[in-house]
Image (tube, rainbow, N blue to C red; front, side, top):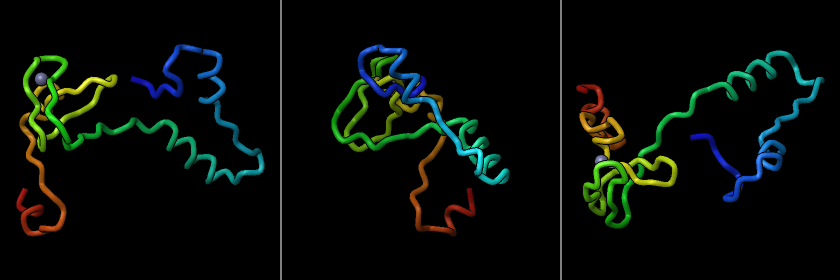
Amino acid sequence: MPLQFFSSPAPHIEKIFRTCYVSLALPERKQQKLQEKLEKVPQPVVFLNLRDAQCSECGAEIAQGSMLLMEADQPLCLHCARFGGLEFLPAGDTALTRRY
Ligand SMILES: [Zn+2]
C-alpha cells in the first residue's frame, strides 16, 4: 500500500507532497543514486506487539510481546504475512547468526 500523507483522500494535495524536485546542478552520480533510492522497493517491517491484538485476516489472537506486520493500518499475524516459517534472531550473537 503506498504511503498516504493525509487521512482524507485529496489526490491533488497528495500529488504535491509526492513530487520530488532535483536540482539540475546535482552531479550525475548523485542523480543516479537518488533515482535508485526512489525506485527501491520498500522492505516489510515487523513490529513487536505492545498490547494484545487480533489478526485482521485470520482472526487469530496476537499476544503482547509477539511480532506482527501492519498492512493498511491492520495487524497481520506472521503466518498471514507469510513469515510464519522464519525465526527471529536478535542482534548480538554472531556465532548463532553464522549458523543460520
Ligand atoms: Zn493471521
